[in-house]
Image (cartoon, rainbow, N blue to C red):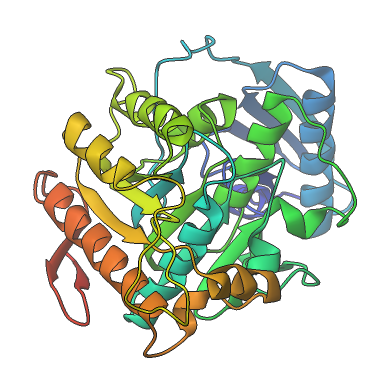
Length: 379
């Protein structure tokens, strides 16, 4: 029996290259295919030098051709390893993600300042304004988004897109969400070294079916470490939002967070600083403001660093309660909390507008109008 080379290529398209979101043919791994009657010789190049990776590639090729083309085919697989030179840690690169227009990293130098709360409420407010929104919970060691979106008991399903297996993000309140929290038990600690965490993040980024998104928000872990570099190496970040409380100990770390993004080798635009827990107003004294953590600290820091001040969010019990029950406070209507998050979101979108005005035409997006805040269209 003479085999068809086109059918063999089609069979190889069913093999997904882990962490890249592409099949073996799309990724360029297949160098040559030779057919001699019922004999097939496949030459491929892979980047992973490990014996396990070579063996896995060979087995998957054999299975695919036997299943999709001819079960009695005699197959020889020649594997060449082309391991890339290890990149300098400061060499930040990002792969464009088809269909995702803007990627905003939300960071904080210090833990406990409400970064995840700001991210969740920013996401649902963008969705309320009519945008298509995704949220990647990149806080590998302390994922909180499944609880904040009331989907802690959900598990992402798999779907097949163009012959490739993809994860389907969980969706609630108009926001598509992926988190390592979906893949671990509630009482299970994630004890991973940097490379393992980076691999998990890459799979949630590139092996997921996000579809079309106007905004993807990335909830980063506190600090300035390995996960931050991995994200910025993997994704073309449109800009970063830094969250801080007004107190000096938080501001010192927020300053470091801004400095990280502004490093020459990283050069991610800082869209601005958010001041969380800015003041407390008792319900029985609506005209009073108590500056428990200090007054205007983050606002002053933004002025010192010459970056935009995006807004202040008060210290309100309902914000904490809403996060705990899995319904972000910004979903409340006609409340001061909703107004505060709407003002913050408008400022973030406006900074993205300004940011994208300087992008070359080959960048596929431009935010052009403010409608309910803004509208996004493709060039």
